[in-house]
Length: 407
Image (cartoon, rainbow, N blue to C red; front, side):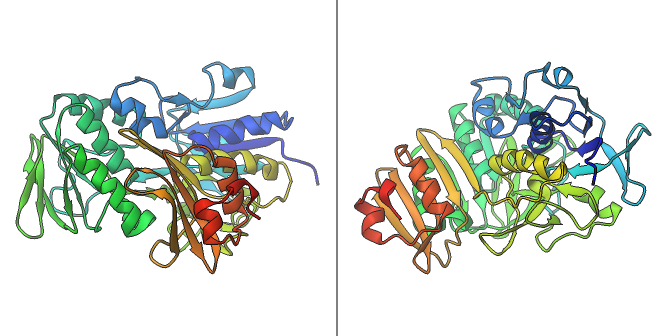
């Protein structure tokens, strides 16, 4: 069967841009069109809640230099989102009425921030953080704010709390969970991050439900909790997660997976012929886990974008990489590899949680499902191998042994 001559990529984020570059890197000399809603050229998201929000830089990490796309004959169209996909006709329509036929199509439309489904949840001045423009605007607001309320104690919320403290604001974080990052890290490791922020003056309202966002036409003034108390703030950031942008795929006839994403097989193919999905929207059947996995992190977008390029050109390789992400908060840096359930997986710690220099392992049936290294940077390759192999490693090896020799 002849290969494609025209590949259309819907989405100009990290997954879409990486896929386009990888097509060229694999020698594809046909047409590559990238349609994106963003007005900026493709960039990576992690610096937005880190270096950009802290004020260390005004720019993100660009996926490629400005001239890269033209030099590699990639037709990048920022600020031109797709509005319709006709699977039968193999046509994508953009918001200017342009019609683009494809031989192979990649959907990489990313995510949007979740909103608060409460009264006042749509008030002007309520911040979310997803784009470069969001980060620059929020940073300006933090610089002049006296009190900041952050709704959500996940990765974005805790990194934003560190940035708000850096800019001199009083910070309160509100979440229904019993601790920050609790769903990912469980009780003991969550407490490390809670204590870290507490030492920097962050106040917590944990196990708290929000009934309303307070304020009016001139902007928000805080949030009201279910117990009737109010938390006031000059700035309110909603960081309660993201939802995949699957509207386009759904309208085209692709049914959502149970996790809200677009269902794809091990090779990132959807149920429609010659249509693939990557990045935040891809509900991917992961061969190692034996179930669908959808990961909204930088590494998944980058790695899936690179991997799917080969399958767009006719390969049939499964995507098997482990989830990976990293975070920086104050003087704490960490990396997480794998996919654990901290509610049921057993925790083993190498080092001292109190010193904030440790490696946490989660085990299921004696095998390592995930590892988190905090301010420890010597074991990255070994941790990756242990997690990728889901190795059965005894506790003594994990806590005191030479991790590089684990088998």
